[in-house]
Image 1 (spheres, rainbow, N blue to C red):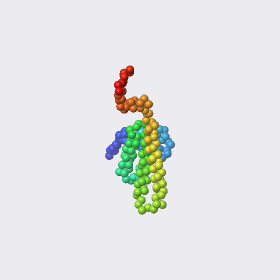
Image 2: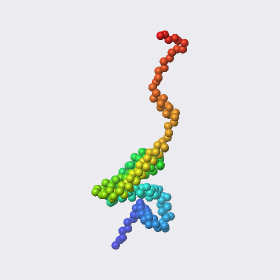
Image 3: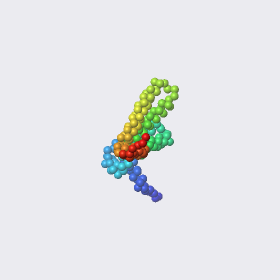
Image 4: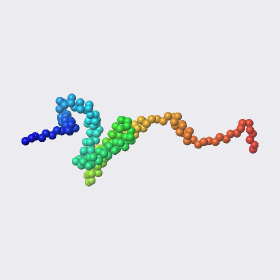
Length: 189
């Protein structure tokens, strides 16, 4: 009987090796640290994604809100991505992008607490009070985040020079006709 050996394509082999390495790293196996650093140096997207604690927090909140509902989880993540783009307004400044990300996460927190509060009809005021306090706190963080985003965006906008302002004002001024009276000419009444 002949044994058939299947050879893995290189991409599958790399994925499996990487998965094994990541599993051991997540379990705290320090013996993989040198290899892990080499892999992270080769693929910047890995450490950008895993090292972004804001994304990790957002993913945790999505999981909390969606539970096992994959459609809801995927929809929330897409809505979040859309909101970040809208809040950043196409700006590529890293500070604006970070503030937009923060505002989007705070928005998600507010929506989450809104959902929790609305999903508890018939609950007593005393039972809802801790949730209401958390929602109020999340709302304050959200309002602060969007205020900070707006302020920083305004501060980063280049200021208009006084010459440009004067030029615009001059361009808007209606033409004034000057009536000229010749010097030394008498005016008859």
